[in-house]
Length: 298
Image (tube, helix red, strand yellow):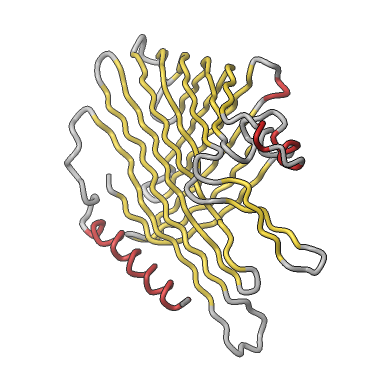
């Protein structure tokens, strides 16, 4: 079964990579003059299998599929930008079973109005959720694993409408500050309720709110820089505070360093921090080092 999964992943990786054999990507020259695009798809896979191996080692595999797109249409009066990010990955370790390593659906659409060269009023919408169920793992009194579902597709989901003013002096840096309404959707796990975890613990699920609206202020800071043709770095800092006070602030800081080792082969090093009071009272951290095949469409 593990060999079958390995072979299927290799076939998928080759299918993704094949169109990129042509220099410049599959859709080179297909964009209109007023459009810029940075679209990258990748497949990353690691596989280890130990059988009667006398040295230390545990059989495991990890797979990750990503799709990252930054699409910009530019006109005299306004610019329209769409950021799209799909990530799905899983890890299997002998003795532990499968664990989700990455799972994200993200779509942000912003319309900037060219009031001046650098100051631009904007309106936009953002949608975030996940693809598959998430679990919390613990043990019972006998040491058996207990698997408890804590999230799923559209639970939670976040829909944000925003309007404000952007400062965009160049292609490397932008700062957005605006009024936002962040809507949290959660049908069964309590993310839309101020005391969802307490009600779930009491078994009082039927009184949980399924939708929560939070009007507030939002800030988005983005920075990206290409050190050379093969090394680039990008960072995004998002913060939201509702009108109830600064103790209700949520935030996410994402950093990614990308190194193109060879055509179709890429190394990525990332570090993320996140804080969301609806999910946890402590700050969350994620560090990743990824290596695998990459297909650059544009």
